[in-house]
Image (tube, rainbow, N blue to C red):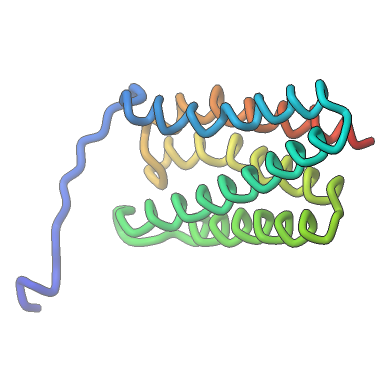
Length: 161
């Protein structure tokens, strides 16, 4: 095999969350909390618009996280695993179906799908970090980051029920 056909990577990753991980991890969670608070505060057309925009934000972030799983799988020792691909497909499906549901005015369905998707991330990413299928710092980041989205989405669901 020619040298240009293969690459060997040696990776050293921290257990602690890097500062960019903090910024890019918690920053995108702010629109969830702000959106939920404003939707509860403004129970009018503006509140409905904020709720819808927060759902769209949630779809975008969940779709992004599915891509993160796929991207990480390219750098997994031994190649992508079945669980990485299955998780990516599951997260993508939940995010896309939530987007379709939101566009059809099915707010409760969309919120339920997003809650399921983010709960999956909160559970599986720390496990994946421990097995080498995700960055090691996900074991520390995800349990405090993702519940912000889950609780905010639950608040929006409670508003709609």
